[in-house]
Length: 80
Image (tube, rainbow, N blue to C red; front, side, top):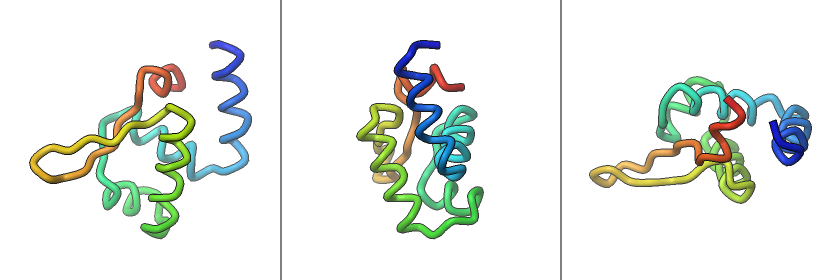
């Protein structure tokens, strides 16, 4: 684990929902709706968290047939 990865984990550990999102994305890509269901959080909060994770370079958004999905980047996969 790199120093950057350790720093990110420490930062994210203060907010358990971030870790839940990452754990879910370690298993498979997911929609916002799935992340809302699995984390029991509000949609707006999940979208904000995903934007934060995208800014950190851990998650990326992509579309399949008009459906937005989120998956871990190569950097994000190091956290699994």
